[in-house]
Image (cartoon, rainbow, N blue to C red):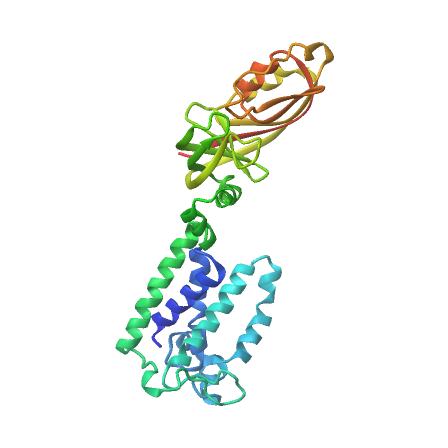
Length: 344
């Protein structure tokens, strides 16, 4: 096989087996695919590692020891430090690349001594007329097919993998939740939702921004900053038929914890009044302030502030919503504040 065919086979296989589109990982596999040919001084790796290739060439036939499961196993052991250095992706890229580097020659006319030290040659297929000749038209067709597979696999993996692509095609809510949980800390997640409103029973068809999840439901915001819980449970405002999500602009997510110890809510929240800020947590209110708490808004939308016996529970409430409910009330509790800064 030609050098480029070995590289294409290694890249396509690594992308498929590892589910990756990382160019460094794929490049590592491509380089590793050339190493089995170190057993001949006429190859690129043979010229680079000439003393090694000259030693091997004098003792072993081409496509024997370095084209075998035996050396691949030795390489797997020798590379174990990569695994313990928390680089398992490069460990597997090197192994897959090396393996594909010699396994491709199984389809050549002379085959390889895959089970070295047994010198019997593994050749596929059995019919000699169907075996590949280096540089032939048949190899060119195989190369074109491998490039196509690699491009498709890399494109799918760069969008999150085959399962995500499948979920996207189906428009499933579970797929949308998975994408948000994976990408929501790094990118805006936008959702196109079709379904019905659980209160009004009116059809829903619109675009929303996903700002969180509650169990296996999505929490989304419309263009008027109103929140909806999307799911099939009794607490949801939107029962979805399809949810197609896209990964939007990159964000910097800043998360902080705010602790109130019988302090004025207004004073504590004033500095947090930033766009795309969401507050979650539980506050216990001063007994004198509890009677003055009044919730605002309609049940048609998700209520980000809920009253319980001694205070309020917050789920992705904006600073404005929190202040509208609590005002100057004194409270105690922990709050988690998330602010998403969209990157230019």
